[in-house]
Amino acid sequence: GPQSVDLSTSNTYGDITYTMVHNDGGGRAGSLSFDSAYADIDEIDFSFASDANLAIDDIVATPVSADTTGPVFSSATVNGSTLVMTYTDASALDATNVPGTGSFAVTAGGNAVTVDTAVVNASARTVTLTLHGPVANNQAVTVAYTDPSAGNDASAIQDALGNDAASLTATTVTNLTPDTTPPVFASASVDGTTLVLSYTEANTLDAAHGPLPGAYTVMAAGTPVPVSAVSVDAAGKTV
Image 1 (cartoon, rainbow, N blue to C red):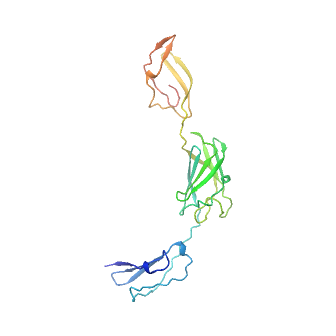
Image 2: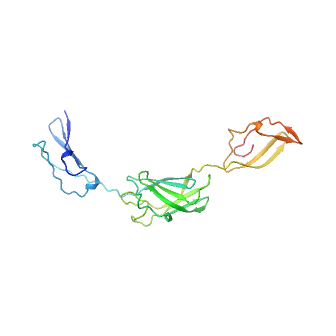
Image 3: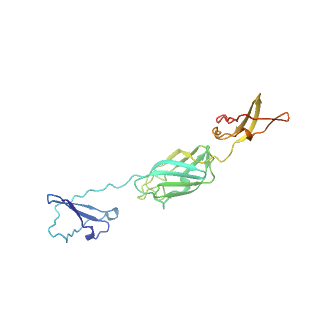
């Protein structure tokens, strides 16, 4: 039946491998592969010491297209003072020749935010910016990037082959910064048996986990008034 014979141990070109395949009809076919480090080889000597009857009938070279496409921006998130830009690319990113912090423009709530550092993670294909101060929960955040020139530059967001990423206009960043500020009491009013407490809060209140009636003490003319029920209006930010 069909069998494969791997003759790669006879080559002297590192990652070059040659595999000879015998088919049922007695014919022979082979394949040759080598990595990009050997792209300049212009002569290869084959030696088949294990089978003196082997001969090469034909060699067909299939060129591999060079990667000339730069990294493509995918998304951005921010949590506190850490903003992460994610890219897609066939190659890893260049983590050594990174762009300067001046190449980036970040805003939070419409105000410019200084970028202190920019670090590239080659395998994750991310660019992490450390902001001078944390953004607040619920703030609208944008990021922009300016490629130094139209060509491939020494220091830029680029892949391992030196292909630059394109400039990025101000783009919305997903704000993952948690809300750590509790609601603040604003005012209270009463109408008959209904007493309403109003709060200020950047987000809505939690209507599913409201307090129990026993958490409140209500006095009317110095006399305690029992609280029979409590409900929370999430959007209205009232209790």
